Length: 289
Length: 281
Image (cartoon, rainbow over all chains, first blue to last red; front, top):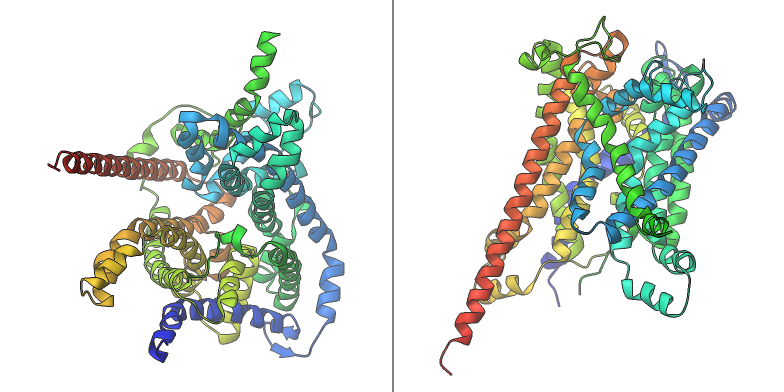
């Protein structure tokens, strides 16, 4: 029988960190929810009036930016998966002695500042750059066309910036894959393609889903790529929240939009955790004996 | 035909290498444009080679000040988040307790929440309390979003830990605290160190959450965001290239050091077994 003092030890260890998260993550969500139901102005102060029309107004007014954010983030996520899977596969099975170097190259972008990386894409995609010249030459874009300030540029930026978040969980699950299962499939006369779709993909599904979540969620709330690479007609919901909070100071509308985004993302996340647990996002959770 | 088979066999590897080039292209551009001699305020078009900005990388005082603010903030964030996160990780791996699922959720959800929502909610709270935005609010926010990442890193180190070492220490009469200080801490130290480095990197790179909670304080990313309107000085490219190079050298040093340590351990083990084998029966 453990003494009370011994049983309290884990709570003492958890305490400071979890209190910090409760005070500065959970509590702010409550205040944001409350702010979203208030009316008033910055000059006269805000009163809680349970103004649910803040939500209906905000959503109907900015539905375009919501849809655009999910469309951009969704497209970027799909492209990340399509180019990230071969990359993760190559690193896990084909790279041999180059494995560490390739893994390093995947995380290398993290060693330069996010904003500077995005601005580098502005340099690459600016109107007179060789890349745009080439795209014109092969008639992928019209002769008087441009890449900057288009949806394509924003999606390309999102894809670039969030690709490592797709590759790393994919690599982790491919690395754990038991190669003998692939050999068994081959021994039973499955073609390379059948083996891939019936064995490899299902077994790496946790990595695929974790990668999709880790790419889609930050991309959907992002406003850096649309600010630097897009024009005014590429504004995402993050841009609206940012300018409502920091430029226009229309706090209730901003809070309502931000809360709506949170609820949509959390709903998707909870659905995922219900089926897969927290393991895929933070590693296996073994209860100590 | 043979060429085709060869190409098919290596297709995955080629795709991989192509993607790697894609990942590194912007970094090469950043480094290249640190040697540019731009015409006008904007550093987007190649105009000519110069090393003048490398000779005085800290000439723009606003930029240097913002960098110092960022380094100070990242340093304090790393200390705070590493302590809080390591304690949580120890509790999660070592103890059974009620409410473990809730604790896990509280750690995972911040990592999966869009930054704009975290920034906006913190600002909402600071507005209600009338808190003065600045270095303090930035530190609160940065520690908050770093804790979860520290927990994940340290926990993975603790899971692969041989607990018999601690039992042996206890059997030899060491107190719980002595065991922790002399056995546990040194063994998980690499995990704790990489967690600290990760939170330092997360903090120094954060833009979105800082954008909401900085008040008039200017960090390095916030300086770049502000300067974007009036043209980003070439010094930004120089400093970014310097930071990148320094980080890579530091990482390589750590890797080489680890390899050497592993080899030494192997050698020692070999010697131990051979000396046991040569003992007279």
